[in-house]
Length: 298
Image 1 (tube, rainbow, N blue to C red):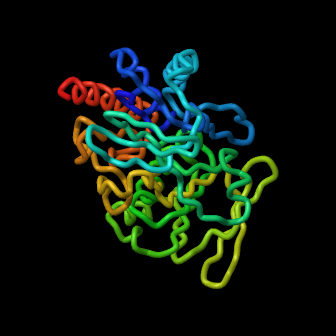
Image 2 (cartoon, one colour; image 1 turned 90 degrees about the vertical axis):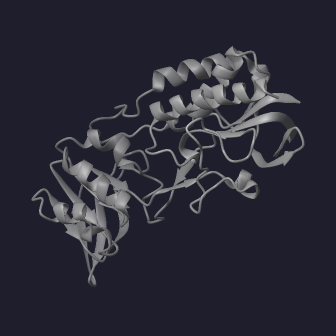
């Protein structure tokens, strides 16, 4: 039985692993790969290779340390966590593992709109997080699709840097918010109410989008597109433990502890505000140190 199993090899999981190993905790990281969201780069036509996600160098150092300590990593896919007396059983495709404590750092995935061109151009002018990538659209023509409060906030952030912003809204709900009304009055922003994004076009990079509104279809030239449908946390493997909220995010205390004793969580899989690499790094360190305190008392 391990002292600690960490599920996920992204910024939160890698940081948790390094901190746990420094504390001489017998630790195992279970993940299919290492690096998580830091492997994602947003590129624009004419700005190939431009890096936006910060914290990459820090994560790379943690990643190299874990790769050196090969005994601490299993390249496997965890499928379920079961609580038992004295700890947990982690079921994975390649076997079953046991630990006294678990840190879940499995991250989240963007919700796809699933229109033609979307997956092909992801990362090549198309992003799912304006909070991470808005700054690369400085003085560029940007577009954003979404109807949530998150989408309106993202559009407002884009409007601070982009030359102009086309905001495609499938309904009018979010645009009636105070910030939505402020956007409507911004000359740099054009809102398309009751509209649908039908296609993303471009050879190697996003060049235009096709929008349908009131029975008419038009093509809009843009340099970049944000699809803000929200994130889906990868929390299915702990669904039966009752530690998640209605959206599937694991709710945690300020020590990254869930209501299940010995189960901790960090990064985008939790309800911590804003999905950023540096925030995930801090939360991963916190989760590992909290797990260490928990194990000392057992």
